[in-house]
Amino acid sequence: MGLGSEESPLEEAQPEELASEVKLINWSTLQTLEKYGGKELVAETLQEFEMEAEELLAEAAVGIKKNDYPQILSKLHTLKGNSGTLGLESISYYAKLIEGNLKQQDTTSLHQDFETLTAEFAKFRNTYKQSINQKDQQHVR
Amino acid sequence: MSDRKQVLVAEDSSVIQNLTKKVLQFQNYDIHSARDGQQVLDMLKQKDYDIILMDINMPKMDGMECSRQIRSMDDEKKSQVPIIAITGNASNYSEEDFEKVGMNEYIPKPIDFDRLVEVVNKYAQ
Image 1 (tube, rainbow over the protein chains, first blue to last red):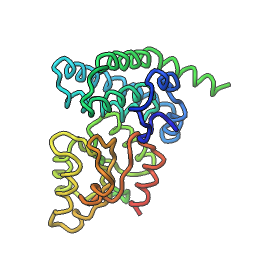
Image 2: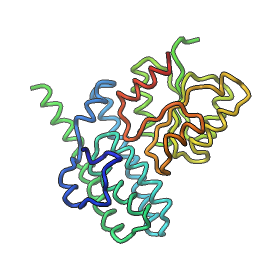
Image 3: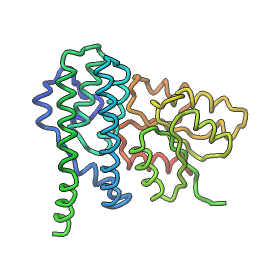
Image 4: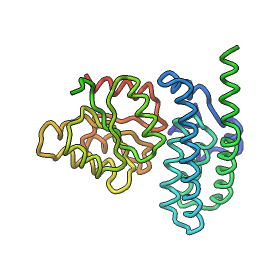
């Protein structure tokens, strides 16, 4: 079962173990999009995601500083849906983990999980353009 | 007047909004965008749509309340427009809850765009 699925019992899982199995970018999800608008659509959408995710994370960070849990939940819920739709599994995974914990009023690992989420996003931001180019070259071959 | 089917996409995230727009334009639909439930109601008063794709978590008015209000509109055609919920389900609604407010079908997030196209094609016929 994929980690992004709604049925995944995150509460019982070990995040570190699970996290090692999730991909930063699942290209097979993006290939579905390619059918509808080519590589341009994929590149454009990832770029748009980068901009929107930056805002969502900044707003969630403000929520964390103010202990405003509804704000954190709202921003990370959107981030979870967007990243999951684009196959950005590790970002979606950590957004979902934090959302699940907050819904149960468990804030014990909030700061640490948010740091990890931010780090996963940074990894994505620093590598996705290069990854798209590499994928293009693979297609050419 | 275009023969193309008119689809209203109600979604506050620009990533999902633009992506859905491009995927459905590729399928020859005319796409119109709304950012919240109130905007959906305002647009529907001005124009008829063939399908509404409705996010649940939106500012100002959420998709549940918006669907309720559409179903209680006086204009019969407008009140019966097919509504497809698109949701990550932050509020843990059940399929029965979606049915109760008059939604025809529900597509979970993360969105599978093959499934989305299939459902839109079904209601566009």
